[in-house]
Length: 108
Image (cartoon, rainbow, N blue to C red; front, side, top):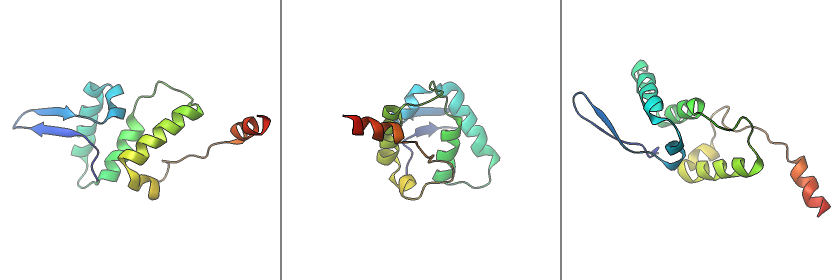
């Protein structure tokens, strides 16, 4: 699994060459150094650990998400990390009340 983050390093510098579309809306000047600090504190990690850390540390401009936004995010997760949909880590998926959507469809 790859997260789509392309880094290049030399002895004293790390250059971020590319990030996936969902991360482009983040303040990478804060997020990347914090991610490096997180990785430096761990003896071992896998891509799932990194994905969870990123998900927990993303800044969201939406306190509450509407259905369209949730569907868009889920589509991105399905496209970028399909294994997380098949076997989601704890806390990744949350129950959603679909009653309002179902009622709207019934009323049409």
